[in-house]
Length: 268
Image (cartoon, rainbow, N blue to C red; front, side, top):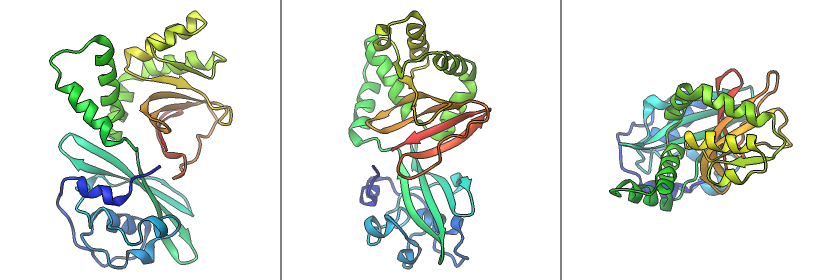
């Protein structure tokens, strides 16, 4: 799932840059897409789904999206693929967008863009709860989880650094279990064992939604923050010597190393 760029016109306008003549390397292509207020040759640098969904649509730069030039980061590169992240937004409402550039016979080409797909209703509900004078404990926990889910990648990296010991205990505890998943309390308190119920309480203390494992991704456990349907953000811990799943526009749209087998992940 991914946003159509026509939705980007709802974002607040920000400062833009003009297209500059540069060699078509992968960073240049990403910068044109996010920052150039006009990119007449964009179709020449598209491949894959970009030629279907975006060939005639505005880029984020052309739509006036307030992308932050200083936020451009290369999070993965190989001989055939480069993945960049760029922050888009203003004030406290920031989205991290991901651009996937692949190298083919004609050079580097943009094949997809993604962001964690949280619908407007999510933010409307979060803003409404934030304005409430008081909330029951269950709704206050729900709001805390929504805020964490919508946090920027940089804020989530800081959250990891601040709560690494607790996250490590959750990952270690869940690794010793055979259950496929566990939800945070109060739902997780219905788990059949005391150890799983203890994990449910630990997850709730950090405003996390749950933990799970995928039998096709052996050696990694996922500590989920939140999301909607298959659009999810969280922390992944992989055992020593185990590689994380690859970054792709189809499932794990972000897998960014944090420390010692820990990663920030997002799915779609």
